[in-house]
Length: 99
Image 1 (tube, one colour):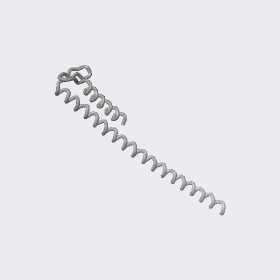
Image 2: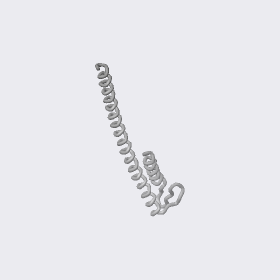
Image 3: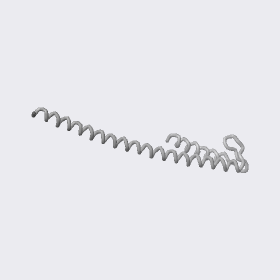
Image 4: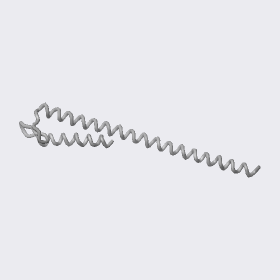
């Protein structure tokens, strides 16, 4: 999930850097002269990084929620099992005294 957020931030920073460094005919991105095709590919790569980061973050969030739900369900089942065992011990203990 952290990797996804990092990719989104890096992609957004790349887009911002390209937008604010472009001046008229010449384009210089992060200190490099870039042609129109290069700028297009730079933007495409940035967009892909943002989408990929969003996808990774979404997948990680779903996975985390599923694990929390499973852990909660296991805790509930463990509590029921503990209660049932305590009831059986109580029943066995009271049965021995009456005999």
